[in-house]
Image (cartoon, rainbow, N blue to C red; front, side):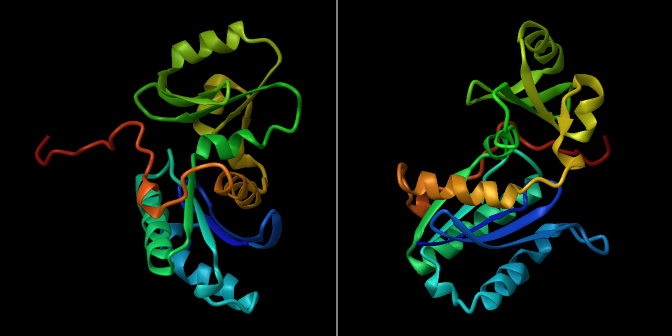
Length: 210
């Protein structure tokens, strides 16, 4: 099964092509010339298919990060994944950025993922579950009560919570997404209609004049 996966939710864009659980190609794209990296998603997909002598019709499944993360990025990759799956009549799966990042941990320590959710809170992934947007003080209490943990966070929260920031390392997030997608394609609903963005909390709304 040829699987195409992509992620525009985090600080870099990842596009990866796999044959079942084997990685064939992977590309990483950062923001360029004041353009958010999701603007390059379609062109990068075309590049990776061309380099592997494939057409879109030869792709048998798509997988994408569904969030949390950039609202623009979430909309971009879920929309493209749904459109491709619908038009090509292929399988589609979504994986949260929290689950993807949890696989950075290659130790036996308990995995905790906390990403900035603004308003003194973080999106928390604990015990292999998304706990929602949790107040930072509550997360600090969890960390103080948890022994031998591996905390994965971002640059902003690392200052308050410690742990490692995924933004400071070269982690194979595209490959991780591909492996998770392959696994989920075999065990969950894969209809494109069920693929939806994961909005844990609504985006901030600016009211003119206030």
